Length: 249
Length: 250
Image (tube, rainbow over all chains, first blue to last red; front, side, top):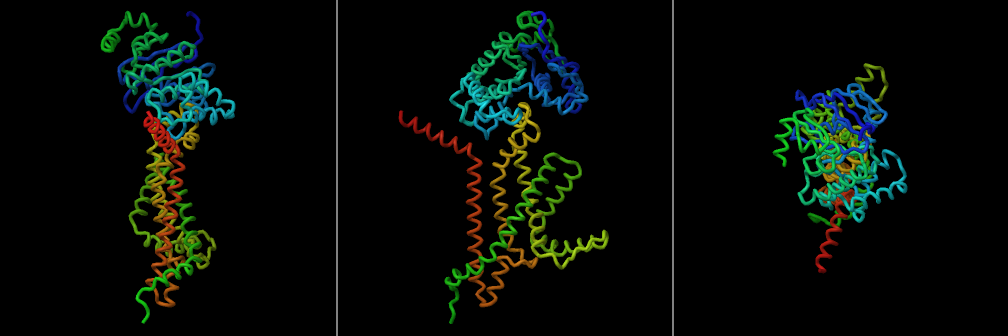
């Protein structure tokens, strides 16, 4: 896997919450078709890093390169933020489906209003996505009628409906019962197998080990160690990584 | 000896008041409209924490909610002419104070008063919308305006509607104070008409029945709107019933 195209590159990212330095000069590089897992203890800045990608958090400094577009975080323009958001899609820990819309309406919302596509054109694709996540028969249900696992799969379908170049997962299974995490992880594995480019913040070590092509370990706003999962889990180099993995496994 | 209380007069008194109903309704609807627009603006100022304006809004709401409506009507009645006269003198405009109808003062006072109340309801409703949904909206590429229109507005309207309904009915009943600005709406008319035969009690009972009916109708309209907005909940209830029926069959 020598010369893979770099799809997303964030460099020297710094983010503060008040006086707290959350991200300390962090770099994130994502190649095309790659699954990057970000692991680490709570408060390490994993989610913040992920949320900086689609500008749900605004970093104070850093440079962005995504596909052909580059810009600097210190002089970010509205257009850049729109670009990042329209070409990425995020799956949240709390699903965050729109409760006043049916499953189908949740999927159609962005294509209808952001891309202004006609309904007839996107509805078949949305139905296809629902079938893919195993919820074809739930199109007319409201989110509150679904289990957590089902809601999260709808959220994945909603994200896919915008044809994102990168999917961002922010602890997608942390709010789920153990028996429901399986169905969501299965869907994510299927996506990975189809070469969807994904960045996954997770506590599921098994997923990071088996489905990811690259693992990053973060602690205290730094990337402590990263690498190919097999080597990473078998021979962690840093003391901090070893301590973390010991606790998790 | 005339009867002490004559129900006949109560019934017959109602049609005599109905010609004044449009005036009452005009005050209610026009004020409700302006109150909603202004209340919404105030709520946005507070939610967005616009500097300076935010503090002014807090002061305004506090004053409006902390003083009686009747007193506010008096202030509008005497204060607006002073304001106009002041403008005439200082910037050379030529507004004729005597040509302003009482309706103008009444609508100003009611709009400003109800705006203060509804702004708090709207603010609370806007803030009650889950932040995660807003982020989800941004994450799929919706603009700030689109997030507001497609996500925050429908959700918060659902939350605000019951309280807005109460405020509306409060306004409806409050219009009975409009007579202090020399507007002859239903309450003022009752007094004038009753003065002819001195059947005050019967007249006020007829009047109360009309207000009651109007309140009931408003309640029903708001209940209907609420049901429409809670379509999602209704579907859920229906599906749950179906599921129960299914379970019962087994």
